[in-house]
Length: 432
Image 1 (cartoon, rainbow, N blue to C red):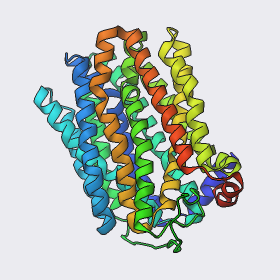
Image 2 (image 1 turned 135 degrees about the vertical axis):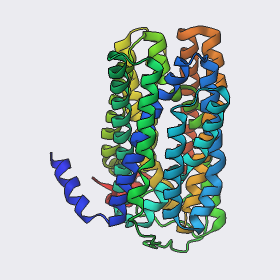
Image 3 (image 1 turned 120 degrees about the vertical axis):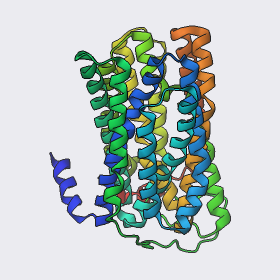
């Protein structure tokens, strides 16, 4: 209750652009949440095998990754408001059409189309928030943004699963019910452009980086630390973030897009049960994201990221090897919450380390690296599952994912670690 009261108080002080963007993003994510939980089940219900799902995920992710860098450049030099509006309109239109087409050509073609325009929100959300938020508020705003994204996806995925089951209960076919719910999701994403129309395009240089010589030791990676002025220093940092994100993307691409198939194939659970479980995972992630700044204040941002990632590993392996639904569910929930809790902290670290004029391209490079990793793993995952079955196929993919996460966390800590004293001094403003 105390947190809710503080959040309501903070809401009144947020800039108008932040409030409108949050509303637009809620609509956008509700729609994509419905697709996230139901679209691969829709493909499966059309009679396609597991390889089709892997191909769709891979080419959509690849298309998104290919657009990240161009959109980052355009966003840094152009009007982010107009690009976000265009992204909502075109993404929503694509999702609406995807809800009805069934041919292999249309599934693959629209996966490419959707992937291209999904990049608009993914790349420009963080720079848009940064340019409309004072540095002292950034960690909190990023955490709230990430939490709202997940909360909206919870509404979409949970509501979508329930609605699909309800439509089937009253006599609609499985394919028909999924088409109806996917259409509603596409419509929600399409309407996200409306709040964005009322935002103002103001580039606020709220915190210009101070000029400091570039050294071999990266600057402090927390709120309150000035970003480096050197382009070489900026791109070195961007490259380091991209490397760790690539490894995380490779690991995630083996597991995350197929979690609903994992539960339905291994445990034969209903659509509603899958929707509830994935939604609970999002709720736990929201809580962990909101307490993330408190952990940052205690141990520093880099240590907080590594701690969250490492603590998720036992739960990842537990999920991969168990044959008990309850244990798999608990493992999934804690892995989901801990691994994703680091995301807003990493965003704050990146934004504070690079100059304002390179924030779009910095976010696009790191997102592109993640999505490239994600895109390459679809065929690998489907091959492992079809070859080794629903037990060992998933167990092997979860083990590979855990190994990649360990390597990424080790490199992240080695490249960005700072002394605890510096960490504590730099993140005082991040406390919730």
